[in-house]
Length: 391
Ligand SMILES: [Zn+2]
Image (cartoon, rainbow, N blue to C red; front, top):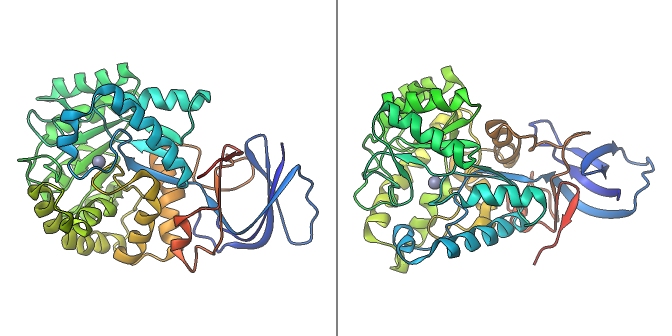
């Protein structure tokens, strides 16, 4: 089936000015011709939209987490089967919310790996998934309640090999403490530079990219020197880290929604005290430090840490808004971070709209360039040329 979309403005994922009054043709799951005003386009079905953008890419999500207020606690009472069902539902909700590609950065089993394959086969509905399997963390460290405890360089290599065996398509390392694990201090180192370097050499040997959870200043720099492909969170980065990011071309995925959602819901009383305390301490420093990194030219890719408290998979548009309001990006720059740049980080054929590229796109009722909030409720979501049923 050939689908034509007449739109007022078309953002292609790049920083180029949007094209206006064009018709985009979709054929065989890919973008075909992009016709100018007045040209005739024949199609089986035609849509009209104020604005068309590439499908969003969430470079940091946890599909088996539902945004419950107590992440660590919920793992004690949810069964593996329930988590699998949650992951399948969250994948569908993410897609309905406009996320057509998603990187899952850690779960207790390999739910996201199986789901990736089931979605690719057409058995389930959801985004294209890039899955890390289980995160590698130090014994008793951040995320140990779901991660693969790892000590020493050779064990780090073995941990990578285990994820590869389970079908992972990327690797996640824990470089510092974090917010959601009781007793883990965000500012302190966890996996050592030596352990991370061993894991990264092993992962890169097999063509897998590596993301490192890193909040503390020293741990961020350890992970950068070890050669990770992206730093996740990065709240306490300093000037030396900024120079390392730029010299090595490492991406920063700021996950602004994660601390913001905890902070905004602090009064609910449902979150553990240690979670609220740690997120509150990081909230303002994240805005200052990451804003500085952005202005200094660090490459920022969009990722929300969806699944963490009050941070739902269908609300990824909020992360795009926060990149604009907290970091000072223009609406279009935030859109680029959440589409083309995130696609480049993941190494997937997604995130830009041009002839022959996959037809992953959103139809919006307002121009995102003047109103980034337009992403909150896409009128139509199309993935691989197929219109997603919403609502
Ligand atoms: Zn995470």
